[in-house]
Amino acid sequence: MGSRRIRNLQALKERDIYGYDIDKKTAKRAAAKYGVKIIFDLRTAGHLRFDLVVISTPPQNHLPFVKICLARRWPFFCEFNLLTKDTAAIAGEVKKRKILGIPSNTEEYDSDIINLSKLIGRPRRGYFTFHWAQNIHDWHPWEKRGKYFIYRSGTDALREMLRSELLWILKLFGPLKSVSAKSRSIFTKQYGINDFILVQLAFKSDVAGALIFDVISPEVIKRFTFVDNQKTVVWDEILNRMIIGGRGRKSSKQLGKKTILPGYKFKEDAHLEEMRRVVKNIKEKIEPNYTFADELELLKWIDKIERSG
Image (cartoon, rainbow, N blue to C red; front, side, top):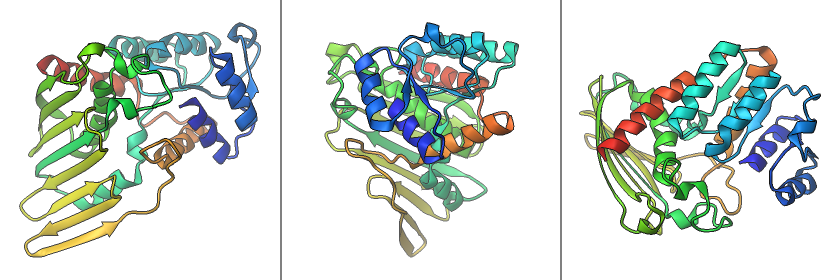
């Protein structure tokens, strides 16, 4: 993620970029590949005045780096938080210290989801199903199996999926009324985490939804279907296609070409648009459209889903 954010910033013509990583080999590779300056010891960086710090560590390590930013009054952007307690601490400190802190809401910048919202239209009444499947061993295959944070309870792959997708689903359909779930550990018992979850969502609006997320399938699946009494809308991210049907008509729309780098399954474009917005927030001192308080509410719903499961 750190390398991706460097690519994003450089695409936005930002050139004065520093990098820090506890693994000095990783830091040196980034310096060689992207030409960034490297900080090998954060204790020696106190005299620097950064316009923005991007925290792209594993989620269980976000809070210590946020605390450094708060102490030095560095504005910061933080990748997805998965630990409710840490997010509560960050939300409280940002509010108290009045530091510009921006949490990640990448999916809101996804052009496919923006198109999906337009095609569903208003009023939004009906139901949806969403299936996302990707084998856990295909997530960052260069990482050692079992050692990456998605193999750990509290920051596991299913929780990461819920954090990523519930954000835009709630933006699309409004606040939740209730949730229920069933989860299983079928192939990941050795890691002590679940690999399958079925979630039912009841919204305060006239919408109901069902999610199936799994990290079992050897084939990547990401397919969302919305149904009301006039139309169906299907978004298949892997086929890069929208299919609209209803009452004797059906049409298929191929989506625009996306940037997908070698070794990745999903596009990078939304990350770039998100970073464009972050840079604008920093330069123009604009409050973020998604806050740590918002992220905290989302994580509390995910906690309820996991307890139900």
